[in-house]
Image (tube, rainbow, N blue to C red; front, side, top):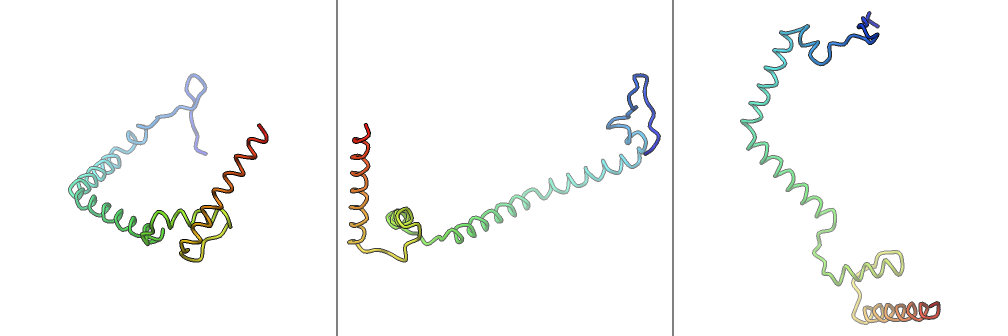
Amino acid sequence: MPNRKRNSEGRFASKGFTGPARDNPWTSAAIAAGAAGIGAFLWSRRGQIGDAIDSGMDRLSEMKSQRMGGDNRSQSDISEEAMTLKETGSKSRGPRGPLAQQDIKSGIAESNQEAKAGAKAYS
């Protein structure tokens, strides 16, 4: 550890943030010039950078919709699958006919009636 001097209050004397800049003025000037050059370059290319980001976001949203199964299912198909998951804990194997849908709906109605009857019994 280098020798560090203490100030009059017994704390280590610190040059703070500007200390290294005072010690190496040419290095500080080179860093500032480099940062200004990078900023000017990026400013001149801001349109291209924005277009690249936009196209990347478009590709990302396309990939996400493909991954999420962008098969344009109807709301009734989605609700049917949700009810199947709720009842069985597993996905349905395919579309169900109107008779099966009626069975599911009647099962929901019966379970709602049972819940109401149970609530009345306890109240």
